Length: 276
Ligand SMILES: Nc1ncnc2c1ncn2[C@@H]1O[C@H](COP(=O)(O)OP(=O)(O)OP(=O)(O)O)[C@@H](O)[C@H]1O
Ligand SMILES: [Mg+2]
Image 1 (spheres, rainbow, N blue to C red):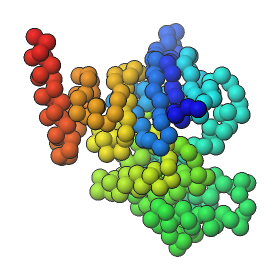
Image 2 (image 1 turned 45 degrees about the horizontal axis):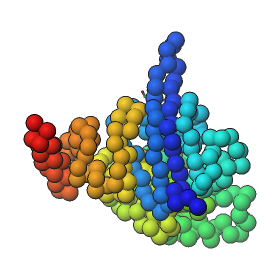
Image 3 (image 1 turned 60 degrees about the vertical axis):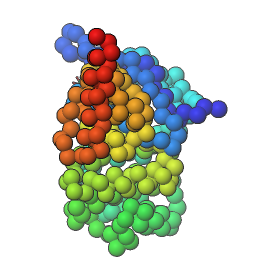
């Protein structure tokens, strides 16, 4: 009955440092509607990875809940965690270290299905995925070293999607790539999201990337949600100085962002005028 696929409610996690403990994230709440892309942004150390690790059950939050498809995972139901993990595909930042250099492309891509799919169907599924990400059956027997960074990330995407996940988690998926090919990989992710009806959690530093990709954006600052809202709300009328400073920090090469930045500045001026 829920129209939300994944919900984080009040996630809080601290780490012990010597005799004191420090909050890494505090009271993080957001939800992802099916078939949408949610962006999690913030500076280094703002708590993006800790939030995702709590969502995935890799860290146990001090408090707060994670609910997937109407089931509260943090209540400790192992079967619900298993179903959740079966529904997830992941794409990591660095396609140079995330692909096993000793495996062929076929083994890398098929690995998530080994033991779950008849061996004779594996190659067919693999070729289908390769073609979907813009590669071909000719690449099956090759090793990662013979591919460029962008092609490796395509292989990583094929691997993440071969088990037909509902939820794709992308952790800085283009920040290790050459700027000239980032757009191609983003376009691929976007078209996969649309074609396969995926729900995506997209973690990034780069606001231009987030603006291009995401429907809803959660801005993290020092472990807290500084603000969240639709792409339009965040970029056209950022509510906090922190978000404005993130916008300011983006190199002025993107005309769309430049427009958003000017609108944000006008907005600040008119707010400060009306409040004085
Ligand atoms: N295992 C850990 N032990 C101790 N402190 C940790 C641990 N993991 C994270 N932290 C601390 O929690 C805070 C948030 O870190 P986190 O890795 O979640 O940030 P991030 O937004 O992912 O940063 P980045 O963009 O650099 O990846 C930081 O102060 C970090 O030092
Ligand atoms: Mg991180």
